[in-house]
Image 1 (cartoon, rainbow, N blue to C red):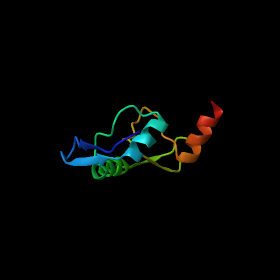
Image 2 (image 1 turned 135 degrees about the horizontal axis):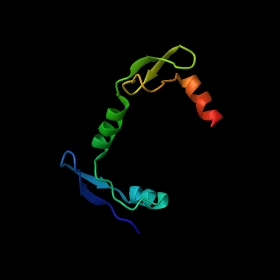
Image 3 (image 1 turned 90 degrees about the vertical axis):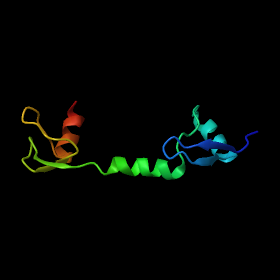
Length: 91
């Protein structure tokens, strides 16, 4: 039913093969678009998102240290992960 297709990566411009098995997997998951990046560029893009700069703040609830992926502001409270989970649970 499916045949291997040669696609061009939109990041690096190299050709890569979208195999019949991958096409079947995409169809099973309900994906309608073909991949636009080769495996190497997809992996590089995924790992780039994990290297976000973390900021240290004081938790507004317990006074402990909180590490957050955004620049804390004085007009908004920041919570450590434990206190944040408690806050979400109360709502």
